[in-house]
Image (cartoon, rainbow, N blue to C red; front, side):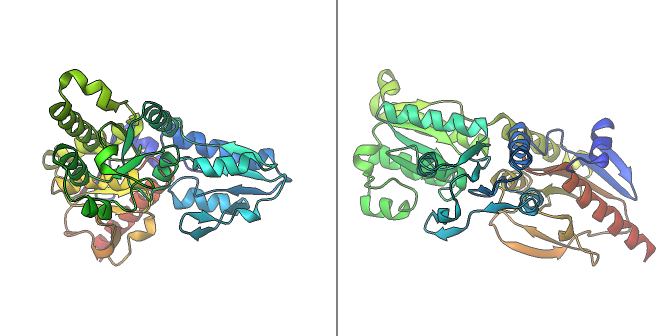
Length: 375
């Protein structure tokens, strides 16, 4: 139910079509990645395989409303969040089935279910598991893990659960704060205050930043992850010397291929925006999807008009669009600025977005353009 004839037509026609006064250019890498497809297939198979047992999932399977709504319709219970990182696991009884989502579950959660008489269906993306292996290597060597990610994101929560000592940096600005502290020291109290929600218990920047390893949330902006790695490597070389860098800095390649490919593809659209005459780029995907949000950042940083919508219904018949901006705010504004001319647009979608969602969004635009011509 997630496939799309329209998207298949775009693929077959060198990623572009003309329809109803709208010229569409589709990014050459977009939509469902292998890890997401695998996760969905495992979750749906669990429903088929255990028809007489109660099924639970510890979090949204992926950050896409259609997929998660479908699981709810299949009577999979989304375990309630109680706040402060706690969940209502009391609803899980002996003999039940527990599905772990694509971005994994924390070590504490997995240990909890290991002790119960339940069936585990682990749909964790292998790329996420690769990150866990990396931070485990940091910890075994006595290094603090620096995680490029959003500390409250489910994947990063799971990753930090494998760490004894860690600090999360969400962007280059925070990475520069950490690098400056490594190089020059500073106001320890202010440093700890800034990172109070993003560090391990008892974190001491004076002792725990002498040996570090870098990992990342797999959905982050990959060029930024690479730049952050270069920053820390350079900082530590200057502090300890090139001959000792291997003792003080570890880095493994945990950059997800699918995320990188989708970012590169939208960057290609952006690079050719003027040549193609793009009026805007549409990004389709869940509003809580980190990888989709980073796709929006690429045209936004280049000054290309762009919108992130989570459903086709965000595009209204009154020619307005309700979208999520790069600050995470939901806003509504006029959509098609000149309905007297053909619309030329680019489109892409996040790794957790079905092709059908792209088709629905494009169909809304086709209808809107036809209606404007009729008026």
